Image (cartoon, rainbow, N blue to C red):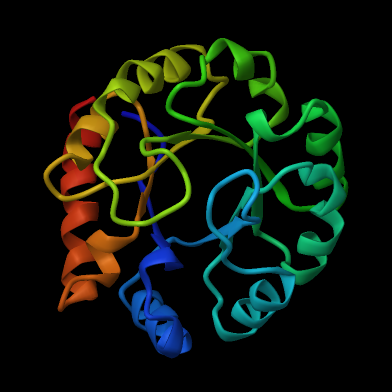
Length: 225
């Protein structure tokens, strides 16, 4: 059996006008993480939220925050985002966005938050393998980062399996992008246990059922592994 299945609701697909209600809804549905994509318009072609919004979200939910930094030079912003977050939260940075990954890991660890490292679909696992002993989670992007609603890129599946084979202990492996009830079993079979869903939750008429069904499907596969 793989590590415990966790469902992360990505607010990238939530209604920004009703963000508090949207977050409360998925919290009541039992989601494990609130996934926040922080985009700077440089590393990815989109701009989303900054520390002020992260701080606001922290005040309205008890669910741990999964803060995904899709920004250049993350080492410059770790402290600011960490101050907006709190105990039990996690900050993930992209390996492609910095020449100083060890420094970024150390900075995040020094704030008391958990650490994740992320990789784009075309990035080789070899680039992050030497960092696995230093982080709590590795995030595999299954779409090219920047926008919600993209189609899942199946070529990342072998990369998930490779990471699980070399990951220490029960380290979390997260997958983000295009996850639906139709393909969640594939990523879990390869070793992922933290599943980010955006449109598959927030673009449905019943987010509670969506989260329940995603979890049931993932846990069923997980028990067989």
